[in-house]
Image (tube, rainbow, N blue to C red):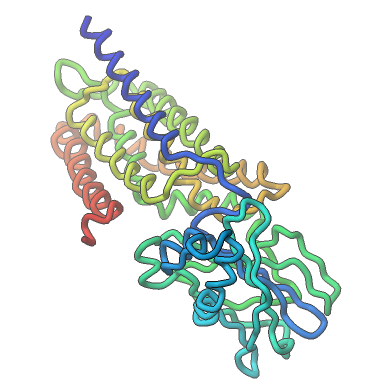
Length: 394
């Protein structure tokens, strides 16, 4: 009876997580939320392009509601275009060796796919004297806007250079601007692309290396992989083979879960607010740490690992935000990034598992290492929860 009740609670737990995931989910258009786009092309006598801004950013961050003026959105856009263009000019400049390249705007319009983005075409007064230009771009990337949305990005997209006769892929994102990268240079004759799929193998590895929350979650899993719970206490597993089997099982479950949501998010089939994802990831660390202290799930801890692994996959997908365009190599890029994530995880396992197995045979393991690390993880993750939900800053 107790076993059936426990399984029932676990099933309800999984159902709750899936419902939470679906509640936050929605389909998005080719342009992604929390991003704006600056198209930068070279014509015969000037740099031409357009700035595309999400309607929600104008309303929520600038207080400009284009839907509140006129009978339709295009009328509201035209009525508010002066203030929007002034904001763009304050936060987006182009310059070369001779100084700043001034530019003027054309008639604003709506992005034809979904009408969620507004377009502001621009044209500089001259061509730069050399192929390398300096771009200063702080659109929604500095306070007070970055305080509201610390995940916002601004993209520079190159299509063509009519002077050199070069045509670039329409999905050629040349530069990504973030709050830490507001000034960058661009070679307009060879803009390059961040969408080189081979680079995403390394990006996956780096994302694990710098992702302290993901590392901490994995460490907590490994801490319990070298022991088993018997007679209300943790005892060492019989052999290293048993510890290795536990580790393979745990890592496989975690990998399957985060691969599912990473793929869904990268393919724009699921979109969950980043703040919610980051908060739940912090909560997942607290839950795993408590499970190490008081193993409620015990043999069925895979339920907890799989459920939280879904949200860790959405966390990994934050890096895949650079793929806001549906490119031909998307599947290959996704595969390489996921492989990179697994390489990072396997490296951590290779380094830690033998050490933890050795320490698990010592009397100090349960009171000082297993419990000690778990308690520290709870403290750190509790701080992250307060920070990511905005409670701490308030």
